[in-house]
Image (cartoon, rainbow, N blue to C red; front, side, top):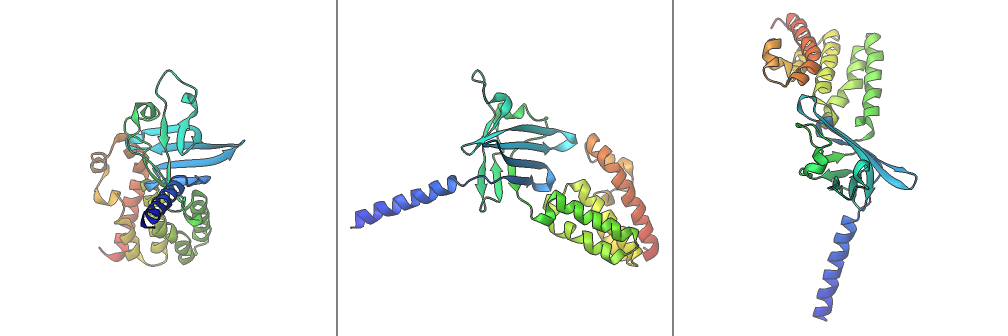
Length: 245
């Protein structure tokens, strides 16, 4: 009886592990931390297809697409190549299929799809509806409508949840743009203190000028961020003038 129970327990554990590893990969859009990568999974013509775009430092990027087969992603350009190594990487679902994990080390076959400072590894998560890219656009559009109508408290209410709840799905430059938008809305609503508090969390606030900022980031990142940095410095002066700081 004891031996029978032992084998039953082993079989049950094996079945549970098998069911977890065989968890289906659900279609949808999955985003890597900091909006540094987007993995899209779709069903097309009886196949499960994927596309993957990631960004790294200094505007380096990865780009690939292909099929999902048996828990692996495999790129189209190498799926029929039997003479060389293929880019084939396990895609592991977790958290009831809301997260997808790609290993950090993927070999040379996958690295050829990437710039030197970019990679595809990491955890990709399905955002909630209001944190999806469509949800963020809707919040920003609502903010703009209220801001232009000089309804500043309503503008703040429309955009603040994106910064408060969706930070992990925001690119760092976009996060600072949102801080600037909210800072101006607070300023016009008569709260320059909150304006400064938001701007002090930006990357630009740690530098006094463009030369200081240029010294701390790669050239392409600097070029993409400098317009936001200039807006930050201008808005900080505006809000400091009202607070007397």
